[in-house]
Amino acid sequence: MAKGRRTNERGQNTQTGAERTANGGGSTAEQQNDNAQERIAARAYELYLARGRSDGQDWDDWLTAERELSSRDAASSETPRGSNREDSRNAARSEPTE
Image (cartoon, rainbow, N blue to C red):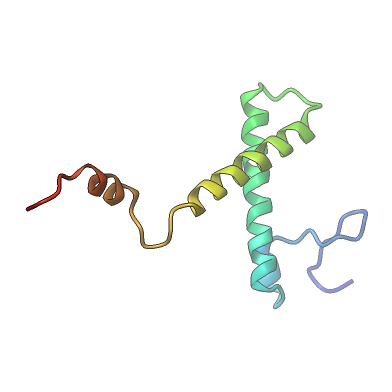
């Protein structure tokens, strides 16, 4: 096993993006995937806490978190970069000038 490398029972790498970078590995795509996984895990934990820390719904929490973040990411990608929603709304409200 490589120095600093962590794996789960299936042999999958469980290092965080920061750990991979510190160990000299990890591509940008891997780092983005790690970031997404960390965000999902954090949101799933929030859902667990909101339910009063009752066990047995970890998959439901994970899937809910994944769905929430996926829809949030999709909504944020609908606005083109450099565009400002507020500017768009104001432009639609403005009256034509003569």
